[in-house]
Length: 515
Ligand SMILES: [Ca+2]
Ligand SMILES: [Ca+2]
Ligand SMILES: [Ca+2]
Ligand SMILES: [Zn+2]
Image (cartoon, rainbow, N blue to C red; front, side, top):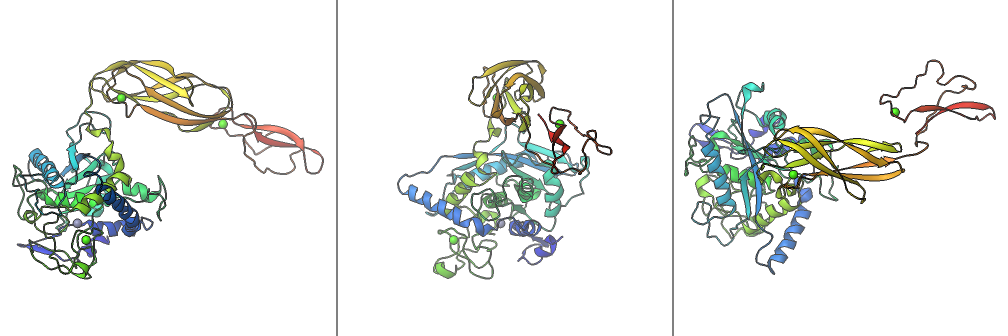
């Protein structure tokens, strides 16, 4: 519970009798770092991001545009307390559609919308947001999930970020490699929203890189996304209801998604010191600006310029904001192209609507050691389409050998999975094998999820395992009294007696693992 006292140290914006925390992202980051000390500090990935930004800037002088439009699949989790759909915390679908529209207006600097700016520093980030069209099981979805907390035993709202991160997020998150998760909830402490910064732990050569599956990585994964107060989600300038000025135009979400794509606050979070945000085209600052402090002076190297109150990464009121800069846009695109759980979103299948006939092979046995032989190995097939399938051709091969085809038959409903034994797999020759298997429907519209691989090592003779046993077994039965041979999986790898010459020159008895 270090989080709440930290909030008390922040400058607070007083609006009526209600105190609002414009953004809880830095406090959330501090909390996560306290819990997971190995999590790389934000500064540790700055050199890499800055180098990539520098490269992209150099390219930009040659080519007018860089890359193309990236479309990010979004799932919105509405966390409510049993209210009817469209009321209170169970916000109207229209608010969600309006919020997605605001994100696109703002990130695309769309002409004729509040997201347009004629400031020459302003940028079209060429990043768009789209509600997901297929869920993690491959079924059709609206990209909106409504969670009644009463059905899951969660505490009554409002929620601290610790409760969101510790309980609600892990229970509801959709694969963060494929979706931007946005939780809309009733938050305590007057927090309007907070985000999780990109995880740098998978970036090559960085301190703190513990690789896939390290505890800090998995913790970072199941809380990844942004959290927004339900009454600040949507836009009162469109058709949303239940929002209150001055945080009524959807800019809380624009700001938090900016953090989620690696942007810092424009004043660099070193208040009261003058600091930078690693973007050259945003004036420095010594703390946040509230309301619409046009003309507020900058400091340090940019002291001659006014602060950029219109920047989405300020604390200005929603109506005051209208731009990301060119450097901020480049920075977000670098994060999207290089960071774990960001780059995978670019190719996520979540925006491909499931169609009538679609299948995928989603699992094979884990990598394993086998004795020479001919095997049946179990594959897991999924009907990723909407109509029932009665046969699915499956192809497999060992290393770069010829493809073999076998056909599963049965009845498999849309979204359902089944197992299929791939039979006659020839592993009679010792060696290392890569088994590749895929579904092979003739009309399959999405092949991105169809293929799975696994490694198999085939051994012959002694397994490289040594053990020291009691001395003095000579002439005794194997296993000796009080010893048992335990072989839980009852396969061909097991302990067998061997008769060798002992160290004293006498016949002795030992155990080895055979194959
Ligand atoms: Ca700057
Ligand atoms: Ca498929
Ligand atoms: Ca065994
Ligand atoms: Zn912020």
